[in-house]
Length: 378
Image (cartoon, rainbow, N blue to C red; front, side):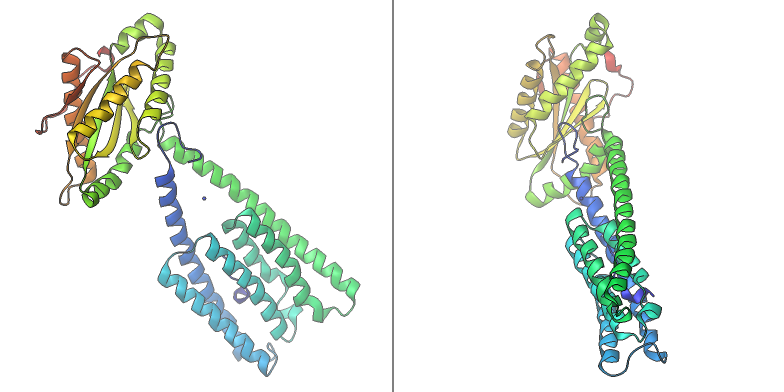
């Protein structure tokens, strides 16, 4: 009895210095499309199966009841078609369709000749599962109240005795609502685990900054925005000066603490739209959009100053290399990203050779990145 339901289905946890908003939005968009496709299929199949009752003698009451039932099935079919075309169903759409599913169950119960046989309350289980999986706590509570109302309306004609009706309504609605709560709690547990997994896959565990994977994932967005706004993508490669000496003198625990403090200082300095990531060792990368080299240099100088003033207990400085590119054509953003970082990396080495604790702007020619450098010897 599928025709009585409309089964359906959110940078707070962002690490320091970057945001999960982009990935959260992408995941949510994907969930909305999947939800719409699933609902479209369920509504279409449910309406088709429910329509079979129009051709079976003795299931539906005659007259206007049969017309109302047929119109209800057509409405479900139309809703499924709309979802298939839109390919999007968010929280508000899910809430509306779940409420419609509750109402459809009542219509089916009223229009059939024997509600206990052809429209038992168990049919609401589909709506309950959909509500538990797709709705937030507030709308879920509304749905659970509607389950009680729907059970009472559907069973009223089958139990003339009010006491017997009350018992059946309480039993059936309690079972359905308990199932709803259980699935909702399971869903919340799954969502927390997924959020934790997403954060771990894109976060550097030591500093809480983004990692190389997140940096790569953000490249297409930055390249598109730069082409659209006529801006340049700037890559700033920061490498802490004499970090190996610090580790040798004070131990790796102190070195790790310095990295965390520097990460916090840089996170407070970069612009909200910039991407700050730790790519390995004491090397960090900032990606952002700028209008010209002067703006990129100002940002780099702010970051250099933030590093030099971040640690009260230790003297810490950074050499920063800057490279810019104006994305054009159909260049692959990932390839363009690493070519840009290569140039910034070379400029960073020029800053070290020039005395450290300074900013160096890369030349326009791409230079292959040194592959045999020792990370700790900077």
